Image (cartoon, rainbow, N blue to C red):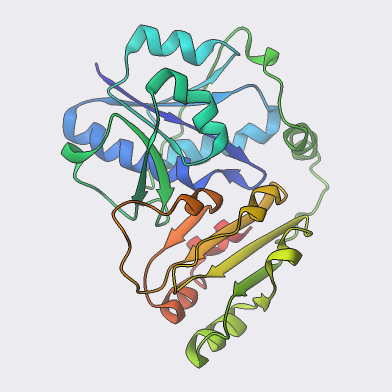
Length: 278
């Protein structure tokens, strides 16, 4: 059977949205063409990976493998995947670029025409995951999985995940805009509990969800690449027409959403989005 491979990149707040949306897109392609969806994750993060397993299973993975340092290279030589999907991040490009050639950036706001998709895709999440599969996949672990050096934040998160007495607070909700939002958008932001910030302040916080209002298409500043791992950025592009070629700065965002600003902000009050803010 043909395989569609999705790279599962961890963040302190679960799987990267590009990985989750990539899994949903892979699930659609697999259902259409009779393929299987294989989720790949590097290293063993212990109890933290319980969340990875749940989220990957729900978004459509058929198989989930936690791999050692050379595992992905060997796997690609063995199975020659039909498609490879990963979030648009430097980590994914560094890991997969040599195996697949450059990853083609693709903004995904829902199911797409699979006939027009590139072989290797760097996914920009334009929506929440649209699959909610009830079954949970039993993960597999390669023998050398513990030889992968994990980032410091993941070592700490793995240790914290075993502490059943800890309480987890929702990170603060900020918004950044180069101009004062219109009255409807401002009211929606206030109702959501978001408060105004700026790029300099975002760089200083340890954890937050940042709504970046960009109706004029100014893009995201490079300084966001230095933010803490627990800072999630949601770019709100407004109603402007989006180019077929994604803005390079979108690689700095976790989500890029299109639509009227006030309406988009009001949708964040839904339960599904609140889980993304946790």
